[in-house]
Length: 543
Ligand code: ISL
Ligand code: CA
Image (cartoon, rainbow, N blue to C red):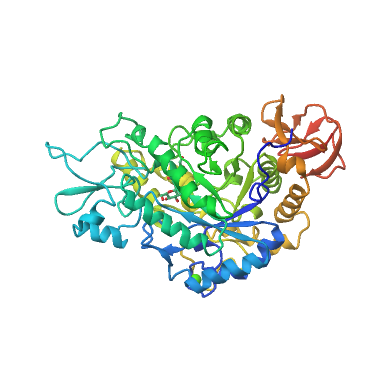
């Protein structure tokens, strides 16, 4: 009933993801920074989180907002200094909060010293990356497709090309080279010695490419069969754990793209000695086909089925509904117009009742919505610009292009954090790097702190509830049959048995039998209609 896994501290932790550019700007340059984060530690403490996952703050030319690192041991001046970083680790630590760093080791920036030397034909550094000649007929070295649309080869200027699965400014490292492995181990130790909590490992299951042969032609990501979750990657992950992670009190969460539960278990099963948990993406596909740029109408059943499958088939999950790459969950799975509060609270309850370590993305705790951009000119995201270009090349009509762009752009999640109803939402004194959503006048922290019934208040209570519940932290999971769009499951230890009801629809729903005392929910008990759930209702019953 109870978990057979070790009860490590990071399993019962609640993690809060910060996208540093958009969280809090301390000096009015319009860019969030580390001193800004330090100033908000009391807020995070009150929310009840244990770990902050920081999206990259390293030196970077920002072709992909920090996911292109030019120096792994330096802080980008936009964000502050290494002293600021040390202070953040220290002050957070004093409050019982630890810092999880983002680890981007599939690629570096093209401005990284290693790549600059490689371009200059230094034989040692040339082999840190993947350079190839074009084919005899003058075409590119292979037919692979990039995660950001387009091909994966960029000219190195000397007649050769280098491989980049993401933007051209993100050349892939050559993981066949033992020196690359050693370099990365040193970087890990540099950060772990500072006392951080561990790493969120960016696209970690694509490191080791088996071959550079042509791939099977596909709508997107041609070539992926040659690099997704290869044996070489498993081997690297096992060695990293043995040589480095096992020597520290830390944990790792892998961002693993395009994996099912079977592969995910190979990447983080407790008998594998690789990662501690992974972010799956199957539940993010509840409103898309194949690639995330093509949206389909959202069906709650698809979300429930994917969550349920991962709950049943994984030993442990990294649960999330939002991150810096995805549209806002309340815009996607909730109802911003009719049931903003109710649906945001239901999503909170759901995310924090599932078995696994919960992750909350900045702003999710106040129900921030997708950005209110008017078109491409207001969008910064490199992926969006590439995809837009691809849609133009494929002659998509302008109206379709704009619709897909606004629905899927990663900037939806990257708009400045809404602290107050002031001009720049209390995020900055100066004009922010990305447009503030006009709805900050009513969706903001300050307003919600005054309202005991707010989404923020609900998050605080739900986190506290989870902390006090062994069933939610360690209990087993079982789904019960229910009507469509209603997710009912049990979390149970020997001493505690909870049944969770989540209505994922805007309709009243006939609920399966209610027995037990309601301990927690997003509607008042008064006026309850026996045997019915209200729109987006969430309840926890004790059996
Ligand atoms: O949704 C996806 C997979 O189904 C992709 O968006 C995938 O998560 C993403 O492309 C990989 O993301 C990570 O690596 C990128 C960076 O741009 C993202 O911000 C990061 O989260 C390259 O480093
Ligand atoms: Ca700043």
